[in-house]
Length: 299
Length: 283
Image (cartoon, rainbow over all chains, first blue to last red; front, side, top):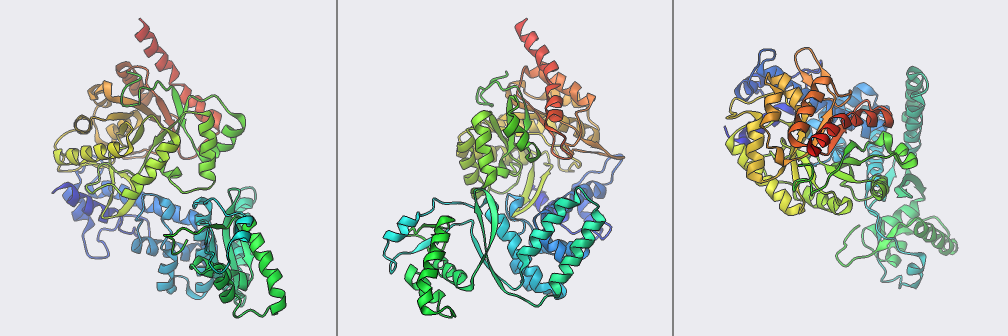
């Protein structure tokens, strides 16, 4: 057997989900005998069988990816509860194993996967999706690229009919059904407090709070997740702000983005210029705009 | 042999791994440390606080890059995006040499994020050496490959682990990051003499040495990097130093990480052995 064949067989075995008691399966879900695979490629020794030696790697793999995933999505875990979260994590990682050299990207496919597999979130599907999107945006904001921002003066001098702007790569715009940002901040606060207080009390409080949010009627919010001075921030946006920024990100000119963004606005026409000026001033101060590159279709 | 072409002709002393729980201590207290080893993948990012902290560390300390996912032994080609990001980081840190493991961990674009053991075959040695050469040519810095701890052996193996290591480094003409804890762990798991291993490595290729602690289970030992270095590992270290001379040494402590001073003090125990190597050289 050549190197590639050995590695394919071993990787398949190592990445096969564990049993509920966290041991290696004797037979994989696709019918392969993992005992036979282990016997074929791994030598036994005087203390461990081939199967047991392979199992060390199988368990290490799952412990590593599951703990990395849980670290990245504490909010989703709070929303679903530990048991449902663990089931989701195992199913997701089985369907979407890491395709990156870094564990940082392990949750990159979670949102589309969760949309396709709503059963893992049950009745909390929308809240779970909102939370997964915020937590992935948070990862992107933490270590995403920050390009040299445009200065407010650069905007003032440009022709708004032609000017196109790119948004910072670390900035994610989210339209959410629930105020899941508040919930995530609470989860984090309670996790920090749990290190100094009773874990049981903190868990009870967290569960109570999640249940309260899950019972709420959907209350849409618009959110920008971004980084400033190396800290990640969640900034609530008005509907029109979200629309204008989304149109800019899609490549529309400044004028076109404003026009499209305000199309459904209830703001009286005479109040709009001042509002727009205020928004752009804030966004520029936050450093959200970057120069448009000719090759850019989207930032 | 302390300074050789495999460690960029440097003569670094005793370092420790740069880890998040110690950032504040290092940046505020500025302790005297010969050098820090960073995990490359933690900084192969586009921006944010990790890079800002790295830049602050680079202003005051010597830094060497150590990778965990190049997978020299994977049968397929190296990921171009990985190499591109690694080169950007190499240019930032100006690391005099770069190390990663003699193992595999990805296949068909899927990553296990583990250091999986190699089958010790001539085919595997050839493929691995070719990849080491490609990475070195792309990054334009010396490469050192590290022996890993392992818990399994393959039926197809045609040689011992140390023969395989020698075969790879000779074919690739690269350095060795000799991890004496890994040698100890594997020797216990596979019942070989660890001193034979240390005595068999080409001393002139050793760029760096790793020391660490591990966890003992009933039927095997796991390389957990969460304990102090045990005496049998210090004995292997002593032999390694006797053979290769005063060599850049690094203590790995990656889990249940104690206070900075405790980690640093543990690393500095290596001084006892390095001093005798210096004395022997002087005599």
